[in-house]
Image (cartoon, rainbow, N blue to C red; front, side, top):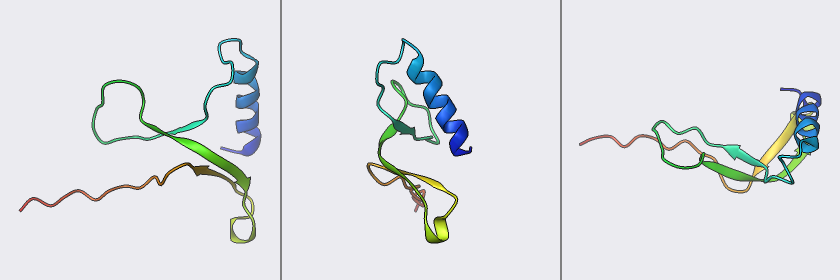
Length: 74
C-alpha cells in the first residue's frame, strides 16, 4: 500500500457519518479462532522513514507485535 492510498481511504472513512473519530489500531492475526472482537494493538505514532528506511511510512504500535514460537512437546 502506498501512502496516497492510505490517505484516500482515511479521508473517505472520516467523511462517513458512521465514523465519528475511531481509534486507529493494527489487527493481529492469530493462528486460532477467537470469540469476541478482533484482536488488535493501538497505533502509538506514524512517521516517514529516513536513512535506510527512506521511502517508507512507518506505523509504530503501542506495544510489541511478535510471533511466539510454538512450544515443543516433550
